[in-house]
Amino acid sequence: MESFCAFTLLQETYANMPFQSWELRPLGQDSALLTITTALAEVSITVKGNQCMLHMDGVHEPAHLLGKWMSFSALQTAMRRAGVNIFVNEYSDKYVIVNAKDPLIEHAVYEQMALVSSAFAFSWSKWNAQCGQEHLVLQVCEHLEVGLVPEKAWSLYLLGAQRTQHLKMPERSSEFSPELAEGTEFHSTFLHMLRDSMSLEGRARVGHSHHLYIHTVQRLLYATRVLTFS
Image (tube, rainbow, N blue to C red; front, side, top):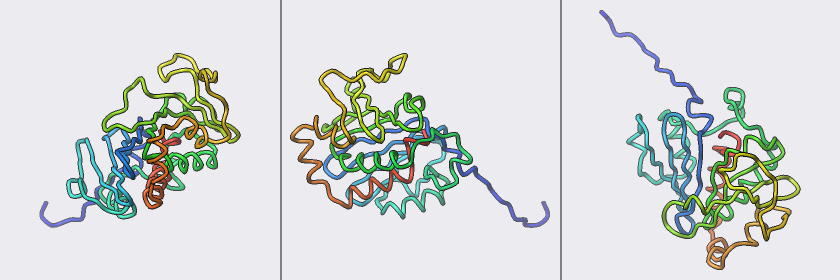
């Protein structure tokens, strides 16, 4: 080449979607970790108060962003500029195969997840893709210890617009069943069901959650829409 020329490098905007799995688990009071596994990398965002920190496990890691605290808005902008896009927009479902869900139910669940995220862990379920647009299925566990959630601790919940129920079946079941777990009953909302079984320590954590922390977790869940895009 005898002269300087302009080059353009392109990256598919939705290369990380749909997500393969996700998990949101508490790290203590007003702190949680959202981990999203994509086809290209494992992306983790720690929330502490109203600040966020990025961690990644993959081939192309944006070293200049890792381990730095910043606001959610700043992190979202920086990640997109670095080519690490796990955030959806109004057109994302036109380019990605998603599990279409009623948006009102979906957003209500994100709000309730954020409210108890200092005490409860939530995770992807394979059954969410098979329960229809009017229902959501996810794994849930009260988790007050530091570290990973034991596999046997997870429970499945079926959520709808009118009622929420704790399912008897485990995630590894071969067939879906709406049968209620023993000793449980239907509840009008997800939040009411979780509060019914919450420990005293869990209630204390949730009761002392700062509004800025809750708002930050809500924004993170709204931006990734893990219940639809995985």
